[in-house]
Length: 365
Image 1 (cartoon, rainbow, N blue to C red):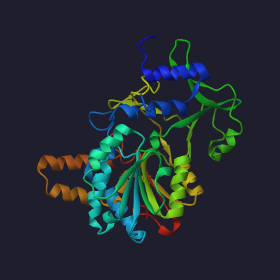
Image 2 (cartoon, rainbow, N blue to C red):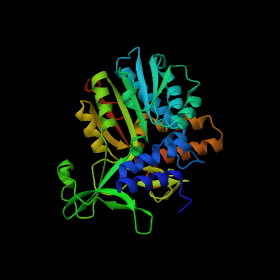
Image 3 (tube, rainbow, N blue to C red):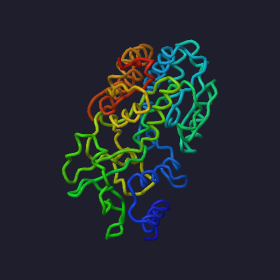
Image 4 (cartoon, rainbow, N blue to C red):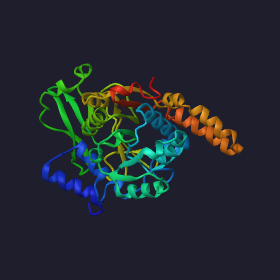
């Protein structure tokens, strides 16, 4: 096998040296390896990339996020200095649209110090170009924990789904960690650790402890969620998380790969495909609330956008648009709020987290 891509060769080397690799380690290498990882080597967004996110569908999405942030700032008492933090800013499109709309509340933009949490140098360069027009100070960080303390408004769209996910599979003698090894034909393949995970069933939600043999459970490291909860509870503010996932913890494999807008085998061509897994919003809320913040939702993305006024915004855009552009607005509205496979409105969920004194964040009343 002489034509193995360099990242796959590195993965095979590690498996040969240390045995089958945990799924979370494999996912982290595929996405964030600084030499050959997916986000280190390409711009994945838009029609020419591998997937399209909501901010790329329409400016309306980012504008409503901006109005949400402005309303939160108002409820915070309009502090003279506030950190606006975006986790995983993509190309920067959402923040540009958001802060343009935020002009509606006088003084808000002048109070902002902008912080972008981004692990990819390639995407950071794209963000710097996109955001260059903005007047407020801005800085980049590799992790939320690096952002200075202080009152904050945090937004994260399709961020948590890309964090590495661990998996365990149920057997007759308990839960075994799912790993990736090399099969008899020399291909990367899923396998399971020989020994069961000790006391793993006691870490599961009560409703999942009687899962049948063969069931798969996924979970993520809580570090980022706990830092989010700690920061909000201690310093004040709120966070809005929008992602695809399930409202309640459940068994089932959701790890998937996408390339060129089509699903692919997660074990094929490591580093060239986007790997994601559904967000467990119940687990996310537990981690945030354990640090003292309050959780709200999740609700469907379509419902949140309607509550924030997307239909009114769409009507305003159409009123001054040519017929072809008006049709594009209708199409974007349907994509962002619609149900079914063609719509994001039901597939994506939204949750908010806030300091208890803030009350219920906008859109979650």
